[in-house]
Length: 235
Image (cartoon, rainbow, N blue to C red):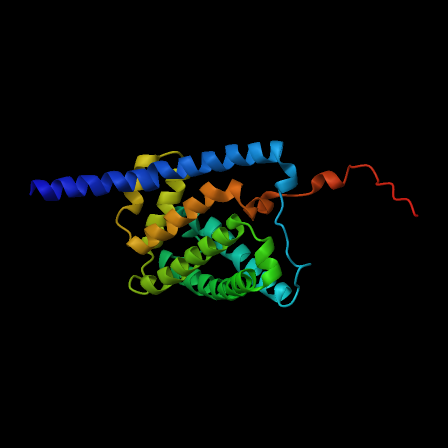
C-alpha cells in the first residue's frame, strides 16, 4: 500500500513538473534566447535555404510540408485555446473531435510526405548534407517524431469519440495560458501517454526553437518598407 502511494505521488510530481512547470520554462527560454540571438547574431536569423545547392524535388517537398504544418498549427491553436462553452454554440465536443481527426489526419499526411522528402534530401544529397548543421538535421528528426506521435493520437482517439480527451487537452492549454499550473497538470494527468509524449515533444520544440532554423517562423521583413533604396552601379 505504501509503495503504491509513493509511486502514485512520484508520478503525480513528474506530471506536475512536465506539464505544469516545464511549459513556462520552455516559453521563457524561447523568448529570452530568441531576443538574445536576434540582438547579437542577426545574420544567423534565417532558414539557410539549400535550394540553390540542389533544387530537384525541393519545391514540392517544401510546399507539402509547409502547407501541412501551417494548417496543423492553426488547428491546434484554435482547437486548444477555444473554450468549451464558446464552441458549443456552434459544434459539440464529439463533432469537434471528429473534425480535428479528419482535418488533422489529412494535413498531417501531407506534412509527413513533405517532411520525409526533405529528410531524405538532407541526408542523401552530398552537397546539401555537407552544408547542413547538426541543428538542421536534429530539428527535422524532432519534427518527424512529433508528427508521427500526432498521427498516432488520431488512431487512439478512435476509442473515445465523445470528445472527452479533447476537452482535457483544451483545459490544460487554457490553464497554462492563464497561469494556473496546478490545474493544468491535473487536467492532462488522466490522458493516454501518447498524448503526453506529443505535448512534451511540442514543448521541447519550443525550448530548442531559438537555437535552430525555426526562428524564421517569426521573421517578418517589415523594415523593408521604410528602408532606403540600395544604390547599384553598373560596371
